[in-house]
Length: 280
Image (cartoon, rainbow, N blue to C red; front, side, top):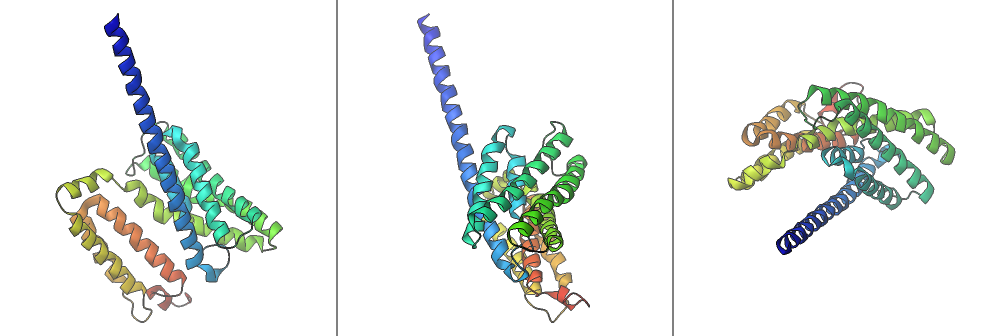
């Protein structure tokens, strides 16, 4: 009996320790998500401020969706609250009043939660596999099209009521910014595999990875930092180098970095796309 009591006590202590570890990791993930959403949201607003209050590219929702989809289902409320806090702080930091900032943040949160729920419903309990056709179809329909369209309806109503803006212009800009952010940022984030990163680190290839990814980023900056020469063809070899040297991890990081640089610079009127007739 004494041995059974000791075994039960040890099992209870181990279970308590595991629960505390899980709770701690969940809190750390939520804090990281809040900080990342804040930084991404502020960057999206400031880098495209010339186009108006609504950012031209909005990747913050894609970051939230990727975190929630890749986490355990029971953590979605904590992560959603963290993303909401990061978004609200970003809105307030760029000059929104409390009411507008809170309502727009809720629009973004509703978009992410609706997309996550619909994607998980479509997956039917299957794991989130970025190479799965079922996930790709569900992501395209719900995260890229329907959820941004719904949140854009809510946002244009809020902005028209509280700021007197043109609802049609707000809807189109909000929808395009959110859909582009989802399409550009979420797939690479979902494809990131930390096991591949650990393998690179174990083989002492982190320096090589940093150099290869830096080359891809610098090539993109060189191509889109000027508007005189049509150098868009140079992006392909810059992306192929990380693919062949670093595998899926390198491809995901390089695609994410290249896409963000290209979109932001193009939105600011720079890059070879401005040479196209009618693009300016």
